[in-house]
Length: 278
Image (tube, rainbow, N blue to C red; front, side, top):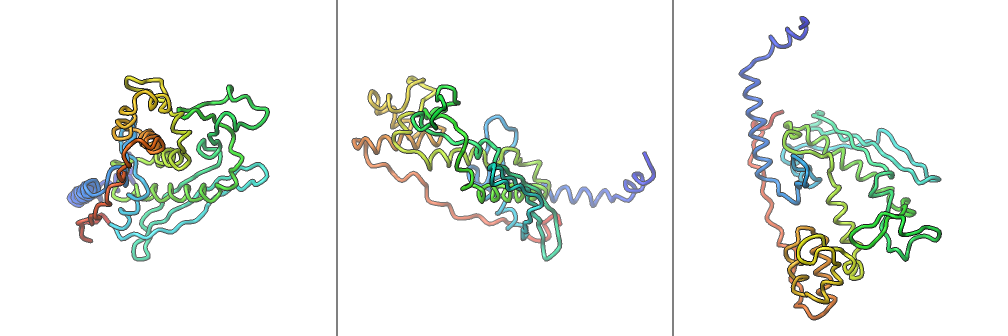
């Protein structure tokens, strides 16, 4: 062990370190109690820690009184070949003093931007739909020829990832949350629901229960009650929405009740300046 490292260790005040760690733990506990699951963060199957989402990151910055600034540190804009990539830096400051920073990258070669899902009959001429990847909706995946309309979305995603990355360094929040797959589930669900119509819903294949392997369109013709159960109980939000859409389109089901619950009153963080770790 070299002398510089020994000098650093000798200079540490153990009582002060212990107090700081306890304060960090207290802040982490307050954040965990206050943020809302499914909105501020989400737990994705197969991951060990919940994923911090943009609304949660914004609340944490508000809690600490931090302001954010962004700058593009690297970019590729190849309009000829449809390749776009951005790396953004997010700088967090308080009272004009820099606290920390984070980086975020997004590019058009990510699957959710590179491809789009279409019906087999809408596949470009010359491509055999049977050779393409298919999903539960009966759609197939083709190269996205509308990537130019998503350039701003790609830039915003890089900015969002930089913000979450910077936020996770505050109070050692990487111990509590991750962002490795931030936004993937949320984006996929929103995209499916926004683009869904009743014909899409009919093609959705159920992979559980007594009608496993059948589509919603097949099930509703023989067991409408099961479609109603799916619309109320399925864990997959897009499946629930698809089932509800079919019930409405069928016009024999009762009017669908409002799905969204009244927004709960925001809970403010019960922390004082002296509780903050910086």
